[in-house]
Image (cartoon, rainbow, N blue to C red):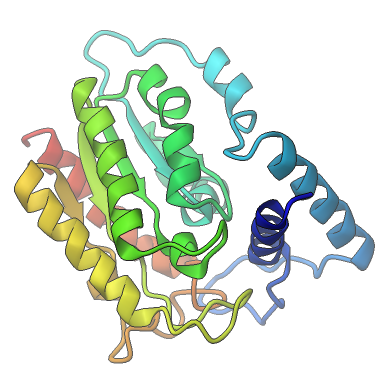
Length: 257
């Protein structure tokens, strides 16, 4: 395995399975602590996946094939993102299922990985709207060092691909991150603020809609407010309850309602 793939594997592994289990707060779903054997099995699977399918195109391939074409007049919405999107769909599925939203989040992913699967996991599904939420794993360096310019370019590229295919774009802010439990000491908080400012400015220029999850979820240190996350990064149901109406309002705005 080359050094780049090894670094990417370790970052994704720790982001998905290396976070210590904490006492649930505000209705968070309690999960049993994985055994060392389970962690080793997951890490092996992630290693193989990164080596053989770096953007994880296989993750939603079957689901995409089985998804029927949208009916005439259907307002299909796809959420493209990382673990925050994936867990929202999986743990708080009532929001996605009752709205008919389609989740295409993959834990640990960075924006270059999302960009590589954008055609398959978004464009091919023929949505009216795409909600893009990514960038925090880039700041964490999950697939190597990334500048804010690099992250912004990837988000712009996804937005431009969507627009070229007649898909309205909602760019969602990165949620607060004071420290990454799988990579301590990076001091990401102000980088998150700066990236969100770039995205907001781009939307004002390009005509996409900016969904601001950050402001109502951030404390004075630009960390996640108490009770809104399980680990400082991944929202609890209380956190998702704040995000849901913001997403709905942004989608309605993109539709011109």
